[in-house]
Image 1 (cartoon, protein in one colour):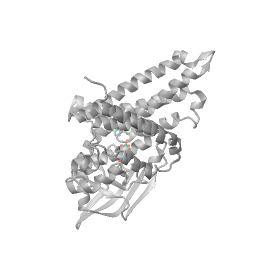
Image 2: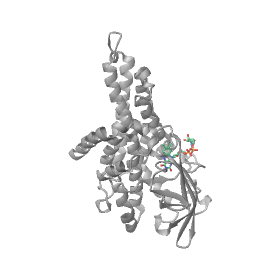
Image 3: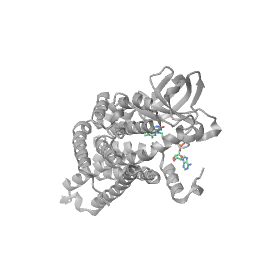
Image 4: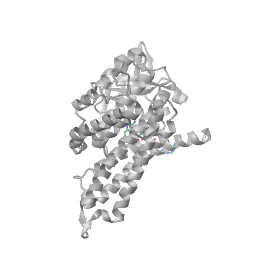
Amino acid sequence: MDFAFNPEQELLRTTLAAFAGRELAPHYAARDQGTDLPRDLVRRLGAMGLLAPMVPVEYGGQALDYVSTGIAFEEISRADINAGYVLLLSALVGAIVMARGDDRQKHAMLPAICAGDVVTALAVTEPSGGSDAAHVKLAARREGDGYTLEGEKSGISLASWADTAIIMARTGTYDQGAHGVSAFYVDLHSPGISRSRLKDLGTRAIGRGQLFFDGVRVPAAARIGAEGAGFVQVMQGFDFSRSLIGLMCLATAQQSVDESCKYVADRQVFGGSLARFEGVSFPLAEAAVKLRAARLLCYEALWLKDQGKPHGWVAAGAKWWAPELAAQVLHQCLLLHGHLGFTMDLPHQQRMRDVIGLEIGDGTAQIMKLLVARAIIGDTARGY
Ligand SMILES: Cc1cc2nc3c(=O)[nH]c(=O)nc-3n(C[C@H](O)[C@H](O)[C@H](O)COP(=O)(O)OP(=O)(O)OC[C@H]3O[C@@H](n4cnc5c(N)ncnc54)[C@H](O)[C@@H]3O)c2cc1C
């Protein structure tokens, strides 16, 4: 067993840590104002090879392994988790197109995503439900040489400014459930599409929002994979991303733990350092151990993915545990800063609000636990 990053991975980590500390961290507080991430930042992330990095070189990617991809997610999110979302959505969409697209689609779609010229999103959730993703209602009617999309997506990361999205749409009947759903790669600037932005608690720079489709025409060539196979494809794509989401949240919390350790060591009260009280140092000790354990779980899932081994329930477990743990740790860091922690001047409150979103996004804790239970108990634990 070897827990160490290899020399290339260690170089990636230190290079990105320096970049993120210099270029992202100073702007993190401003990202809370609700304006989109700058386009030139997205292109810069693309130029650094961080967008859909697992995509092969011939399609514009870096052919990066998943553990290294996790390192990139950690170092970027430690400074600004909003930027981590751009990495996440490009990785998800890139992986889906790579796995299910034909060669023409890969050449047409992937280089622009990898370069950051196109900001892409993934739209599954609808007003009628997100957990029950197999029952999406947005309709894709076959008409002539293409499809017409009619309906609504809700709660979609990057929706208010993305250029493209994979849209999960119903091509079959409602009763067919997951088997009546297809995936389409849609230009969000197409006629008939409108958007609105949600007023979110955190990660405001990602512009989560609604997408409305009113008779939107898409060519048949926009369909990724076979008709009716969309849901299964996207669910497979979600597996590895759950570990990446875990790392995004843990890195965000780790930054606050590091800052809190310094704060309690420096602060003088009752004639000495605040850190000498176990009521102060033990919560940080506990946070350090729990974050480390959850981080290992995330990396184990990515390592399994790199080995081509099953990793589904491990990644689902990471997606449940890591955001919840990160939110708890950030709450504790906020409290350890006393009244200052309660001000908007310190970042712990922003980080805590930011990670809470990922307790919900990409599947809630309950849904993740259902997946774990089903894997370890079997289909009798299916629940629905
Ligand atoms: C920050 C953020 C980013 C997001 N980004 C995206 C995105 O990019 N693309 C996208 O498609 N969606 C996105 N979403 C939406 C997200 O995936 C859904 O909100 C989520 O799947 C839950 O769906 P819902 O909101 O409809 O809640 P519901 O499905 O209505 O669930 C409500 C509550 O009931 C619980 N529940 C539901 N079913 C069960 C069950 N069978 N057993 C036990 N408990 C259950 C849930 O856990 C939850 O607590 C995002 C959400 C957030 C907050």
